[in-house]
Image: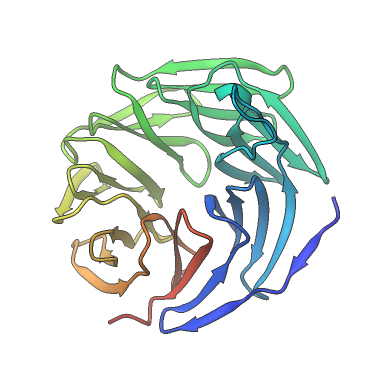
Amino acid sequence: MKKIFLILLISIWAFGYELKLPANVNALKLVGGDLLIGLDNAELYWYFTQNKKLQKITQLDKIKNFYEENLSPRIYSIDYLNGAVLILSEGSFGGKRLYIYKDKQLISYDLHSDGVKKALFLDDDTILLALLGSNIELFDLKTKKIAKNFVFSNSSLSDVVLNETKTQLVAGFESGEIILFDVKNWQKIKSYKNAHKDNIYQLDYKNQIITSCSTDRKLAIIKNNQEKSIERDFLIYTCALSKDGAIAAFGDNEKNIIELIDVHNLKTIKQFQNQDFLLEYLIFLNKREFISAGYENKIIFWSIDESF
């Protein structure tokens, strides 16, 4: 597909700058220092942070339901490995579809389950699928079949993340339980039940440190098998760790504040006044910068040196 470079409209604010997009954000993935962006018009983009250019990669096929045709499918998750982009999207009539984009070719795979909510690369030929029904599966791209399945519990799976080497997985559940899982040996390592008592919205896992946020209004930090948490007077929908795991970020959607805390003592480092939208994504680009986004046609870039 012909590459299209767009000159961006960048607004300079105290927080850094704002990236305007052609449509609302559905999915984000940090690759190196750059961003993979999935939009609700089914387009996928690279954003190169150094030269601030947006490059369209591809657009997914239209889908249909019982009432309409030529609909843009929702993108649920994106991942990247060795030049390949993995996309989990909506399929026709409520189904789910998997795409691999590599070498300017877009290949689609039909999935047997409509309950897949996240897809992650394990290696070039193996995809880890997280399902709503409290289980994970390994999908073999060569055979197009499920190679392994693991059922955790009766509680619905909320979110999963892999560590940097793709050897361990952290899973969060509707019950508030967090499970550390050995992907290679395909077995549980440890269960954490004290951090939360209600549905987990989001997880992050960096440098052997876990952070999680939940309906119980808590942000939890799990480090060296110790569970600690802080509580706020608002629901915490999104959270993230810096690359070294030293800083955790989370958002207050009622006051539109992003807060950074020291993972070691849980004390507030800085606060940032976010724009007026529901936060769904926080990602650290490096030690000094992070981004915030929601279901909007913009991404906000922040410098940790700027706050109020």
